[in-house]
Image (cartoon, rainbow, N blue to C red; front, side, top):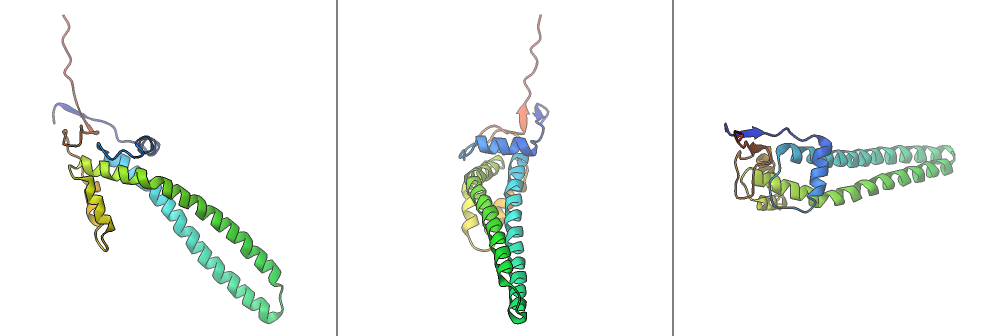
Length: 171
């Protein structure tokens, strides 16, 4: 690999911009940095969703406990109902926004994943393994971790290893 140069890895913002600019482009190749930074964006949204569900479950348990206590001790249930309604509004707003964002990210994520597999010389059709129950998704994930092929392959030029053109001597 003496006649190639390694391009710098992408940062988070550049990777997200690249994946959105190639929104539904399933052809070509993607570097690990492009794929994994975009994957991180998906993981963050998934984490927010999981956190909100956990928070909702905890809040429901707390409100049920307080409502039972208020019912047995003659307390005011209207304040508890108002708090529950307020939390429900927040929960459904955040979950609605996160759900819409995750739906918007679905196609570019699959496209980036297919391009990432292409970079390793594998077919993007390996993504169909994700639909297989159990360990099917592990194969594409492992392939996405591997370094890309240094030279061109059937999917295009390497996004990481660029050929160095020798300087033409001038007279």
